[in-house]
Length: 94
Image (cartoon, rainbow, N blue to C red; front, side, top):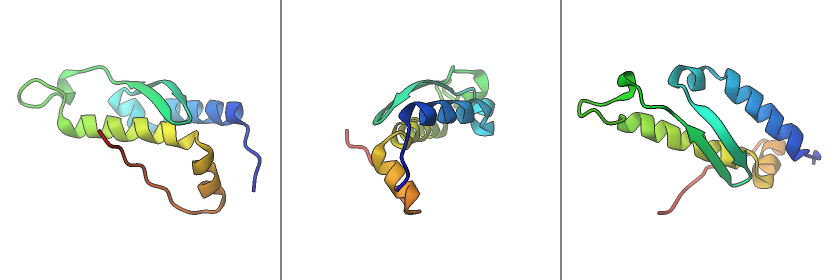
């Protein structure tokens, strides 16, 4: 199994996020992330609002997906799954 350098991985993921077309299109900013935690920002714009003037639910769901994924990508568990070409899904409980 490959050795992982968390700092190198963090830099790689941050650089990827800054170039990723969907993040750029929506205006998502990856503020902070580490294993099991991430914080993103998505400023509310008129084109992201629903008919009631609130952020569209699909945009909120996408932001949740993006944020959870960033937190998950930094975990040792994800790196082990990646090394073995397996799959991993995230679930949340409120």
